[in-house]
Amino acid sequence: MAKAKGKKAPALKSDKIRVSMKLVTSDVCERCKTPCTRGMDYAARMRIEGAIGKGVPCILTRHTSS
Image (cartoon, rainbow, N blue to C red; front, side, top):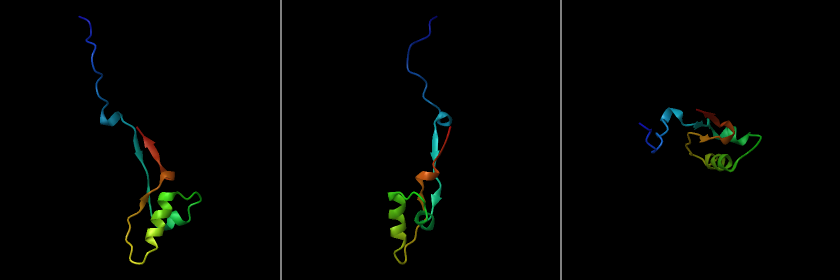
């Protein structure tokens, strides 16, 4: 019998490329050599008295894994 021409099997979750970025705090963003808009906005929000933040993903620490 001939193989049926049909849909390809969907890619497994384990086969997909995963991107991860480190979370950095406002002090790291302020002394960064290549400041980005996301980091500068976050640092400005954290300068306000009483602000609470958990960090922002840094695009410069982006890692891809498969």
